[in-house]
Length: 365
Ligand SMILES: Cc1ncc(COP(=O)(O)O)c(C=O)c1O
Image 1 (cartoon, rainbow, N blue to C red):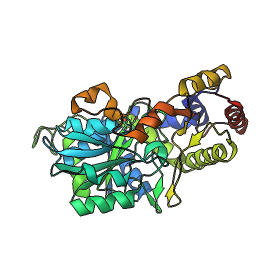
Image 2: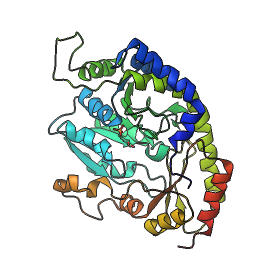
Image 3: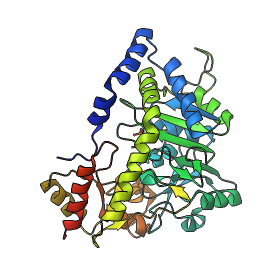
Image 4: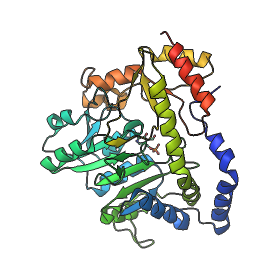
């Protein structure tokens, strides 16, 4: 079976290095926050070319803390794409704000700037875009709207580490960037992990206090805070992985482009990648008329595929109280109804990629 994701291949390739890094943390008992978590945050800021970064315990916390640091709170509204993992919306909800869902475009499947302004009210505080599947959203258009209306911009980079918009890495585009290092992300921890990045060090300073129980001096608490530190072991593992990220990204791009060149089945619709962006192919999502049928077909041929995401945020039960209905975000709804993803990770062999392409091209629905 070709798995949709197979982290054991990375572990096998770099086992000794990972274990040495973990052992060092254990020997120094630098478990919670501390030297290795901080070192990774510095390396990550350098890698992205941003002024500051801080490690946190997962991507959901990154979004929550980022919105808190921007002062988002009860009564505020945050514009969020309807097609994202639900955690982008949790960030707003946890702050007591309301997520306001906007449709995606029909081709890039990223937030549609043309549909943002009609959703802006006097309560809108920020636009939180998501670089979904590793494809940067149209930052220039979103930024122009945000500036016109005096709004903050937030980027959910959980799927876009190393992706670029007009030559600049995601995580340094908006006022604040949020990363997840959940296992299977392009850069991942051996457990949970996340980071917040910004070119405004004051925002990162605020998050350093918030994630540490509202404290910059032990046992003195200046505000209500949280326990959302990155663990030392995760920082150490991420420092090892960061060294390999460029190679992994190149290989992801190579496989993604092969799929794009060689899958010529008219039943498939693929994501469009604008020329001013560098996509990093976190997920290779396709639209097919009947995704469940396609998944079963691929499984019968020993290829595991999954779906991201079968229900758009505005139609999730958790947000039923907001009163959205089918037809409110038609492109996101079509994507949800038709999406399926193909295996894509750096360790896939060329033969496996060929097998996946052959099976896609032989699919008749
Ligand atoms: C787009 C997006 N946002 C946020 C998250 C949340 O990250 P985490 O699972 O680390 O909390 C994820 C991860 O699954 C994601 O894909």
